[in-house]
Amino acid sequence: MTEIDDPDHAGVAGTWHITDMEMWDEDYFNRQVQAYIRIQERGTGSFQFGFVSGSIDGYIEECGSGPRFRFTWEGRDEMDPVTGGGWLEPGTGEEAEGMIKFHQGDRSRFTARKAS
Image (cartoon, rainbow, N blue to C red):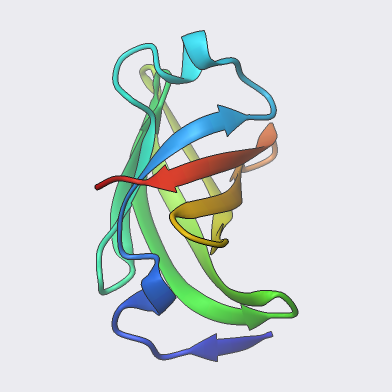
């Protein structure tokens, strides 16, 4: 995999609403707010689903299927500090799929739609 220097992060910059998660149902992941991942043009950002929220630091890499935004994150699960990693891969149109992982813990694939 090759890291790409792309100021718009290959179309991933913006807010993505999480629409489905493999490990958690919609009642949980939208409990406090509409679950989201927000990526800024410099590769930083934030996310929240359920009671988990954090800040993101990432970059674009070229994978076999195209560009993928790979990130690490740190934040909180309720009151507990947590860290992890993940990725977001734009699909066709305004859809994307990805994965978020807790360090030494759960991981979940997810789908998302770019907010208007």
